[in-house]
Image (cartoon, rainbow, N blue to C red; front, side):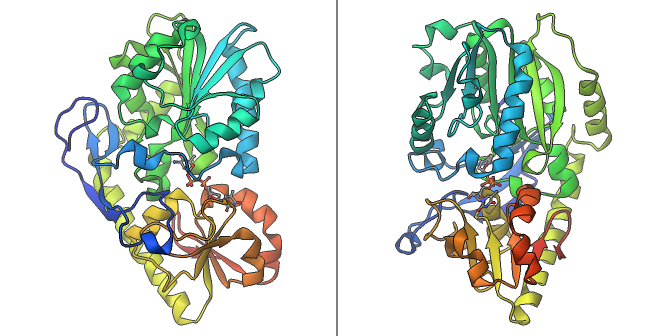
Length: 403
Ligand code: DWN
């Protein structure tokens, strides 16, 4: 594989095997023509960058029926409100904002009744249309050099370019950072939060690795990448979202903004656990293999006791777990989910039926595998009756547990 920034060869250190599109929920009659690729990962020593080897074409992943809505979690709605409030310290009443991957407008709606001019770039039409209905300026395009020619007022005039769970989805980081350079004001900031390599390694949450997540970033990786584009990393702020994320704050190299103490503190920690070099990869691979063995063993044990097992939430992440661990409908009877586009379809590759979450309690599963483990707090709050009725949860990070 070639490093996506240097173009130099990297030897992948691990394969998760044959993988379908993580959000490629499908009908029965499409099983035979389902697309697969090999999910392999490698590490660039130069940029300390954890990256996928090959990945499907971007248009296969983000299209007019992309089945993910940021607002499907109340916790995320709250999180984006707080993120918007926090970002105001970089804004004045005349500022302009661009959000990348603005989805259904959950973040930008927080700027609606202000004088701030805010636009979102969202390549998936269905979610972009929902944002438009909320009165948000959502441009249904990818954010890149080719797509900003009509944004004259925003050129070198945007005080905040931001995103959440988006930069790791963009394969061409060179084009991305050059686009940011064209739009960012002299003292503006580029802020993004993404699943954090430190959390993935510590929790062994390998399910963050799938086609859409082309990179899993760390502080050290972003500081090296920023420097390559005459930018500097000025803050690192850990986030609890998506099982452990990091908010990165980047500005122009010659900006007067100073660097927070967090940057050195977090990067020193990353160096201590070898996230700046490929030494951690061997451990990570071993941990994934142990996790796979333990999860499969536990599920087979439960199935042999005639337990009815369901999956809770047909997340993108579950596609990696189910396919890497070879778990199909012979073990998990069905997965419940709240997303209309997923209900009535089958999980990618593993072909487990997805049913409406409204049927969750009626179906009385004995054990529910919590695929949306990152939303555990919110889910435990709303599913108290399930537990009260004797239902059990199965979680698998950092280790397999039935409770
Ligand atoms: O980066 C990404 C993140 C932000 O969101 C994307 N690449 C795609 C997506 O990943 P995911 O699918 O793993 O996200 P979530 O938020 O962990 O899961 C969303 C799915 O879970 C939806 O299908 C809705 C479902 N869900 C549910 O059925 N009941 C979610 C919650 C909170 C629930 O209570």
